[in-house]
Image (cartoon, rainbow, N blue to C red; front, top):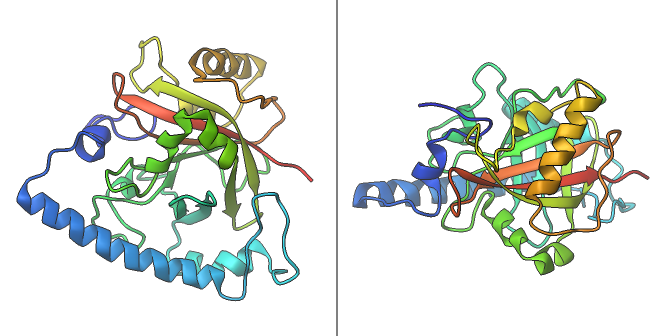
Length: 260
């Protein structure tokens, strides 16, 4: 299997909106969905116990004064590959985010418990450095037909959806983070394509030229103007999923970390 800048090139064919399943595969998908759904509810219960979690506006209630490590530490202990938690209020996006630098695409087809799964788990690009105070976050997730994982991201092709769901919560073990969506892109994962967006190369800015390249490509691929501004000093959260209207297409959201 060949890989192209992020999710495996074959990932969209196998798991995207055009998937054609045999009876056996349908049974497997239903089994994975039910099993993973229960496991995810158990994980959500663990982090919600005694914690309200910060709201999309960036506030934290008096009820929750725990550190990120205290809120998510049990998940890290359960699976050392746990890197963060992502949530978009009012949507199905409410998932752990994994990272395995030595096997970057492991969670493309494995669940939180490391069992084979058609659904996988959202995962962080291997280029992202969790120990760094700077850099950007790049997260991949499947576009599943049942609306789970990152299928919701395709709704952002409609500007009104962004208006109603403008923020993404992304918590690491070091910090609670709220990010405002500043760009919605329709891209291609095929090098040489006019719509190619080398997302994995944007985990950090090597120099001013790299940021200029990012901005040039982003402006070209913007589906519409959001009114959001992106600066080199901003920490960005980029979310990517399959989008089937183009050649090996991707829908990419770019969000800017909200500062106090």
